[in-house]
Image (cartoon, rainbow, N blue to C red; front, top):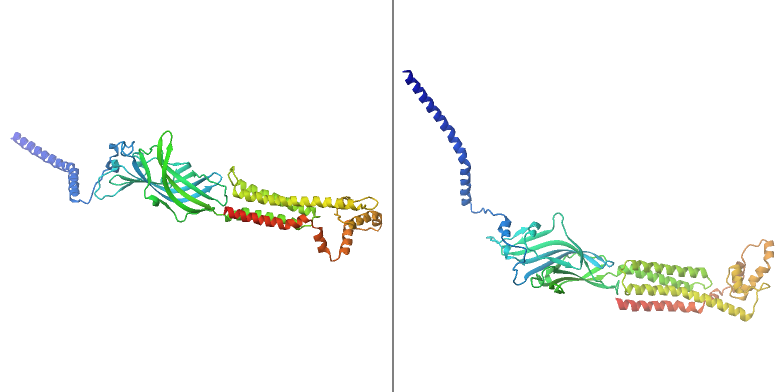
Length: 464
């Protein structure tokens, strides 16, 4: 009886434990099967929603890893055509001293690389940044005669790469270039300069790459607001040609040509007008009495030094070229006129002195007991004497020196002689001044302006 009770209890306990174990195992199986059911459910949703397309990585779509992009497209066949399109943003500076210019522009390349073609139902292109450039082939365009250049990198590098499904590629960048411009200053500042920026492939000659303007003459576009302080941009044009190198062969070359005409008004105000004023100022000495030596000499030296300063300032802002410029012709001719005005007075002064010596020697006139002639009298009292009256008055002043001291007479002999002479001349001052003018002064007042006007007519007629 006891054994039967024990067996019944054991059986009941075993059945209870089995039922609990089954209850615990079923939720665990449900938790394990939940992710699998979720994936199945998502797969069904993708099949039901046809508007959603799950693309792989773009680089995988272009099959970049399946091709060797170290060679050009179509290697071994005909040269790959590369079209160029340029939009000029600004011409930043023109330097006559360095003979160069700086230009900022958008440079766009167009070519076809079938290795980059990809399937697309919408026929839409894909746009990339600079990171893809290290993995595909791009044209190696450089700028001939360039001194320095850089790609703008604010806020990121200004580079854009656009790939179309059929393999057509657009590669665009924003760049600033400083390049040589071979200028001719023979007509400066009345000159017109022709500058050009030249594009060429560095490694691929005409057998591998063909450069051409994408849209012909319309491939070169400019901003309407482009302007320069000293130049007026007359023309922008695009052209092409071939360049030969003895070691590597012929290369296609593209040219961005522009014509610059200088604004002359600035130089008229800063250079030509001051030179004209100095020349005309030198003519004032022709109207000053020939006996006013300090006034005429000071005026002549001042104009000569001022002209030297103007010439030096113009030369400092120009390159040291070995030929004569138009501004040099004007400056040196103007300096010559100023210098000749000084020489003219030196000649007048010398001839006047010689004339006085001849007159005194011809008359045999001796001034008083001290035998003072006109020149010696001038050295004694500081006054110029060109008549017998002046010399006699000087002699008179010497004889009466003691009387003047005893009577406390104040005043120079020159002043006394001048007062006596003014009393004697009366209203004939104008006639005496005209008679005392040297003939060279009289002719210089007419000849110098006429010759300078003729020079200006020839100068502006030739260079303008």
